[in-house]
Image (tube, rainbow, N blue to C red; front, side):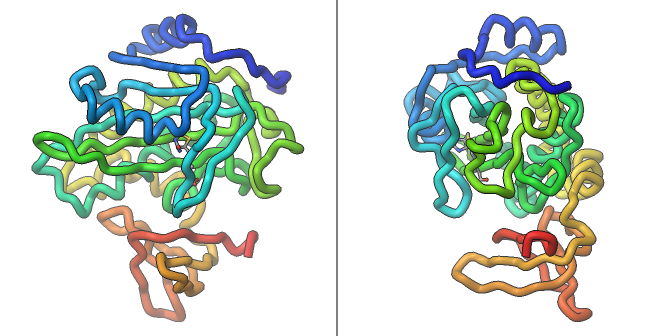
Length: 275
Ligand code: BTN
């Protein structure tokens, strides 16, 4: 369904009603009209008063003046045009650190599923972009926050909701509006959380077995990078090309380079169509 851009402030009571209906009420929710970056602001709040921010609490905003993207990039969108929020997840001390890479990709999968329910069929691009028709609609940025008794992973999510073509940050991006999906931000947030909570809980409980979890299977199914010819860009300016063939047990991308397999746990990929 194609709806007109809606730039009204996020409707907290309506969201709370929707999330209670989907049996995923949020323990703590703050939604100031403007913030620098929800990831940074959540880190500050977790440092000051961690107990007020149980897992899957939400800090969102209608406008970020200093939104952060991956690899030091900025994330800038017009006020009210994006669903922009961050949430904390406490990682048990016993959880194997090499499995932590599952959290961002599982997040991408849950966002893709929620976008599908909103009328825009989506896939995941490794490591954690969400695409609709090959165009980026969502970016995810995670950061580790040291805490007493372990680590809190801050998961930051930005979904392009009502951006018009003229407002896209790059021509290879898209929005729910442009993809013909629903631009109901409250329903979208409820849809993401409804999927994310059980999926993350499953991965954390699986520990060493995270790669064999149902969530990992969902990620592999939704991963449009698999089977694609890719250019892999590694931290520090190194790059190579090959065909993405698998996600290993830790969520790392396995790339076939002329018959030899290379494992990539950190970096970026460009799909052949965009090369
Ligand atoms: C990327 O694709 O480069 C990641 C973009 C992540 C953007 C989100 S918006 C909410 C959260 N707060 C931030 O400052 N960034 C993330």
